[in-house]
Length: 444
Image 1 (spheres, helix red, strand yellow):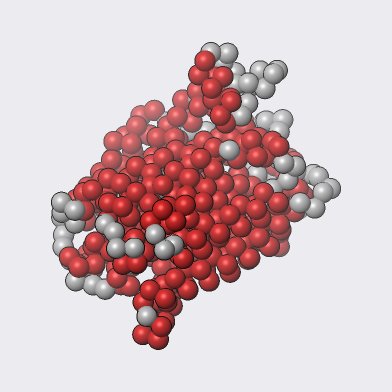
Image 2: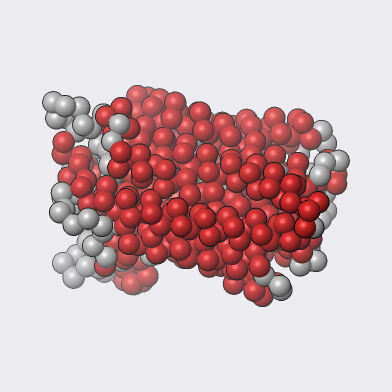
């Protein structure tokens, strides 16, 4: 679908832009010239808004809605909860009817429900609309990831996933700042940002060409596992994949970075406002800084996969970075230290999540890819949903005993340490699954 890299490894175009892209993102960066991929990048601007618009203004929403800080976290959980059940169903549907209609419908639903939230002051209604937005997301994020896997294979696919996630990161850097500014005018204004999903849905319907399996499965660098999709034992089918212990380890590992990231997103405004005594605008800037770090980390995944033979060690290392960043943020005595922790956590998250998504797309052929990617994203949403609920319960239980600040800091640091430890182990197992899929004898 896109220009092939030249013999010297630079992007297919010898022009200045091609050389700059190759220098920044690696020799496969010419994927940005593909029209279909450009539409996917546009969709990637919208896909993270469900969390990035609401996260930095959570504390500011508690008082207008008449709820506690712990309860206002339901606006995050309500958005992520539907994905746990709906994403696998939507993924299987997309394997049958195509990515385009599912993606367009998801964008439209996210936009309409989000815009409607600006018209009410009833917290219960907003929670219900966030549930609807969560259903809409099921047709956005997983479709974007699976479509990249449909188009490309090997290092090219990893680079494309990284560039797509970089776009997500840039969106995450922009919209929290806008939301933080808007909420100071009227607490309902940030929800109007979701209306941007509607014109993007129209672009998808008019411009997006349905990806085919040829881009990935026909690539000479595509994982060897895809060549076995038609084997007699059915090893390429979704159910067979889900019976594989190593594949299950990969899916479990996918939930850990999401848990840590949503721990940060849920309490970014609380740490900034309650502990560091700053404003919603500053909270938005911190979330934006973390998101910028995630964008930078995501862009380098193509280089990382080309330089390191395997996925296990990079996954383990970046999980450690993600945990360290969250711990620093949780312990931060000042805004500059919090900013460092946020940036480090974001960089680790962007890298590890892109590595996981690239690995998952390589474990199935085109017939089962949408389903497997959707299951992976659903498991990720388990982590995203569990974080605000579990951490909120722990903070609420610990607050009366040791004080709110001590409880919050202890919960964030404990989450960082436990999450990084579990994530490192699952990352190493994911490396084994990737090696096996690519026919390599090395363990990691």
